[in-house]
Image 1 (tube, rainbow, N blue to C red):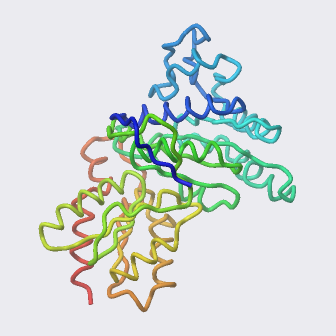
Image 2: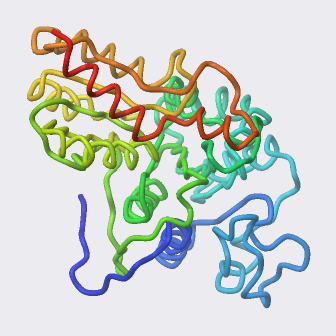
Amino acid sequence: MTTSATTSTKPKTFRAAVNAALKQEMRRDERVIVMGEDVAGGQGGSAETEEAWGGPFGMTKGLIGEFGPGRVLDTPITEAAFVGAATGAAMTGLRPVVEIMFVDFMAVAFDQILNQMAKIKYMFGGKATLPITVRCLYGAGFRAGAQHSQCLYPMLTHVPGLKVAIPASPYEAKGMLAAAIRDDDPVFFFEHKATLGMREPVPEEEYVIPLGQARVMREGKDITIVAIGRMALFAAKAAEALAEEGIDCEVVDPRTTSPLDSEAILASVRKTGRLIVVDEAYPRCNMATDIAALAAQEAFRDLRAAPRMVSPPHTSVPFGGPLEDAYVPGPDRIADAVRAAMTDK
């Protein structure tokens, strides 16, 4: 159930919204712990260091001062070890929030993720629960290079037993992270590096955005744009520009790819008859292909044109600025896809 604030709201960055959600849930439930590299400030971090570093992006800044080293655990640079440790901790009653500094590093812990975390509840017939949240930074546009810029949520969406949440904005981040931490299943929580400084009004009080419920960011009648994470922000910009041309776009943010709110997506496609899917992940076997196939299979007779997908080229993320800018699907590319779809018969 979503609860929305009515009393105190002030602008927060995405970074601050995540930090607020962590503090909220740690105050609410003493079983919530935070683990990861430099989450307590790295060298010199202690319960007395209230302004500890809080990681390279400052996402966990101040937690060690309030909650102490028993609940905010700096780990060695060994993702396989601390992801495995968190999985065991979750089985024994704690609710770990693990930070994988960049989602690219999950490869080091993929056996723990794929063969342990995702399967334990199933293999034990539901008698074991895994209330674990894995926060990870993702995405291009930050000049971080090919090994620090990938969108790997399709890989995790593919694995049964895992939930995948991808908030697009600070408001969404706080409410969805609260839901993820309270969930009794493993949740991978994706935070786009290029949106960490984004600012918007965020309630000070507690609220929760349920996982598995898409949001319609903009209503329209001519064409549906389904866009994930940061791409939803770009889709909204494209829709504003297209409105001046007389094209009325409906923009849908799935919020989570597992579970995927198929009903909301199909309802929009059946209303508009056209579909564009925008996904920053590599184009082969990404969420754009999955959602386009969903529409083709379940709403074929409602489609007035073939679904179109907007994704990067099938290559690693470039490091050079102009190349990286060209790699990322932006509002102009989305608008061009919409114009092409509107001329299809």
